[in-house]
Image 1: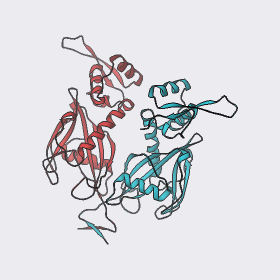
Image 2 (image 1 turned 30 degrees about the vertical axis):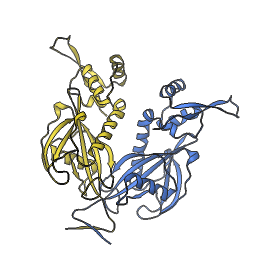
Image 3 (image 1 turned 90 degrees about the horizontal axis):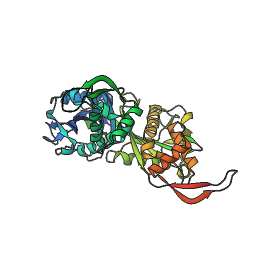
Image 4 (image 1 turned 180 degrees about the horizontal axis):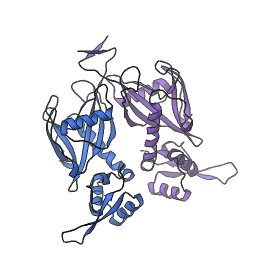
Length: 216
Length: 216
């Protein structure tokens, strides 16, 4: 069946950048493309928007189909629409960001993805389409929103120490924080609360465990 | 001529929210629609993306055609794509924000716009499509970015007093600032510098005039 229009229409896709923090490194979930174009290259999971589904719903569906990941909160990064970004036809893509703590991130390649894997942002492989540019923008958005929206807490496991939270914050922002100022800010923002438990073991004295009080 | 595709394609438009501050009120530039659908309703200026132009270029072109405004910096707010937002067909729109000081904002209705007018954000008319929702999001983006990007200075005329700048800041943020804290923050951010001149006249003592040192 063919669909016909009086003037040329672009195709619209969604792509999802799933970020996590693993041992102090910011990582992103990529899939290996199983189909033309850019076959065999790594890319953000994504695909075409169905004509009757919302953009966010499409992002959620494509992420699940290609990686098995059920995203919680998806934030829209924006639309990328350079006329030459896809060799097939004019394709405008709408990109979403998801933040998933490592201990809740389960994935496996599905649909037309040949593989799925986490990559450190500092050691990305060659990427398909304009996905390298998209990831740079996503990184900037994370940095910009860090203080406003306490993204770091979203990437933590259920319980964490303040030192672990500070390390995650530093990983995303790319800058070191002063320990005292960092803890003062946490107090002001009221974004964490003690769980009442301590992290035992190791050579150091036990550290208090905290949990997030809210998310963006 | 007809354009044919193997699967249904959405149409893609761009819309532009041009903000300015007039006598302490945040205002947005709207056009009165001259064509179906929503004929006679007020709407953000915008229109269909040409198949070979970038999204930002389309936004710039549509704004110029419909209102005569040549936008400087356009920031993308994001894509809005609810399947039922347009009665014609599936239309996904990519929205841009422009900030223009009132003394540089010249506009007149053009193209398929029947009229063009500034409206206070607090007194918007009934809007076409989902443009009321889009404007709420745009307003949130301005608030979120205010501290990071000193948007307020972009909305000021070439020279302004610190009191005028504070009033604009308060207009966008919707909250009052403490005068002393506000000035302290300006100093930290280094976003304004004295011009060496003073505002004369009026019953008060002359106020020093400032200019912006940088923009986002």
